[in-house]
Image 1 (cartoon, rainbow, N blue to C red):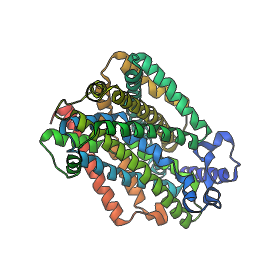
Image 2 (tube, rainbow, N blue to C red):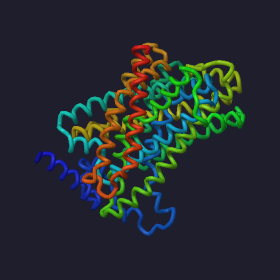
Image 3 (cartoon, helix red, strand yellow):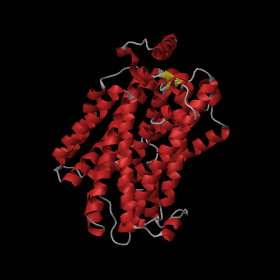
Image 4 (cartoon, rainbow, N blue to C red):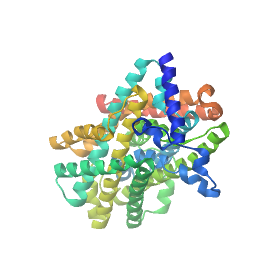
Length: 445
């Protein structure tokens, strides 16, 4: 126990030294870009006070527009039209609450969730969490990497193996921005997110959905077992475990509040960041489903992203197919970099170890490269990766709710009882749906 206290003291010392600018470069880690609330806000007034806090939620939001979301949204829209639009809206509301808790625990404690798990629970639990976390990162990278490679394949007509190699080069280039700090990386990823927004904004203009059926799609309803299964796929893939760990890591030492009042102000600013980023992610998912519904419903059920690309070209035109491919490419590259960042945060937090981020990136790129070279269908690999990710959902959500409900840990930012109750309901829904998906996949129940 004394060793853990020493570790906590050293971490806190690094944070304090970072504020003074005295931390050696090799020792700073995530703390090297920390600053106090006063130095971050300075003399700024009004909306300018929020600028230092905008960014972390955009990185976390990338997990909600990854290629796996493309697959479920396109299939749902093509098979059931706008009927499951309400599921996308509900899933986005759930994601807002979970990511809010993740950001809040970092702000309240100046530690990320993996560090708190390591401090509060036995060492064996930390090692288990680290091992399953690395598996989750690999599964995440499998989906994102294959999605980006598929984007290069569709947009530029490259064979999948050269497309995969190009994806690897581009992913390393994106990650290089992290060397200069989180802000440059956030700017690059936010730009990629807006590329997806622009691409699907034009898609919806091309497809011109009918307003009345669109509004009806916001009313909860199902149509047979298949619609329930697809709804489970959309909801079950809502909360990605790596996004929970990562968001707490991005907020814990970004701006450090020295007093409870400062921490409350930081949290309010971060809440604005979360609302903007997650609403954009929700809008993208809603547009994906809407475009698929208005274009394909009644004609063809689309279960393959390559087929979706071809059919956009057939039903709307080459421009629509190109925009779909560009959006998929941008989403894949941005979310792939985020998975690597999450793995770095988890390793530092759970076992207090770190490897060079580029070495980590190369290691996590090997499995998807092997999958692509082996000739496995990319969309099937995407679906399999989502099933693997389902196993990690509970391990991330449960400790997040437990710790954010403890006043000893959270101080004045502890959850309200209603917040805790809502979070446990969401956890139960997400976990049950993921168990349902796993049973459907492996047992055919």
